[in-house]
Length: 173
Image (cartoon, one colour):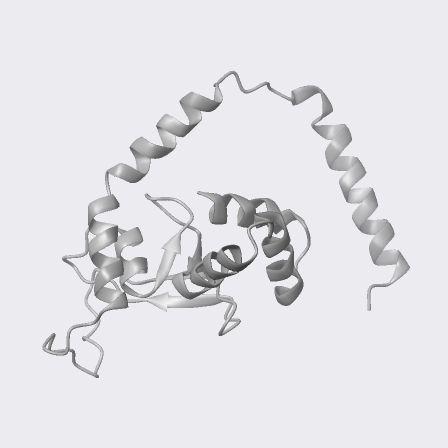
């Protein structure tokens, strides 16, 4: 349970941040069309590889020759840990093994069943299973909003509304 002092401290921090940045608010002069074009251009560079990685994850081949033992660590390791949103496992982070022949971190994430928030250097990922759940919910109830789904995830992960904006963006785009 949250104490009153914690609530006052959070309000005081919010008030301090609002007063501190009050005069440094810059207007973004880009149009919505420019933002969409930039987003499309960024994702298009890795889209074909992401599609192949997703299909490889969704429909694994039995003759792939996977080994159960992890590869020995090298001096230059490409593996990384990333924060994730997975409504089924409720994990907050996962370790992604990335080989030397991996094209990008986004492709390595897709091969592991996650979609990164950005195409270049993702710091947050959402599982394909969670996105599939949202898709099926929308099929049955079209009025079910992205915001409502993001709030449910925030409630499950016991996080505040600051993460809501990131989730909303991640699910929408």
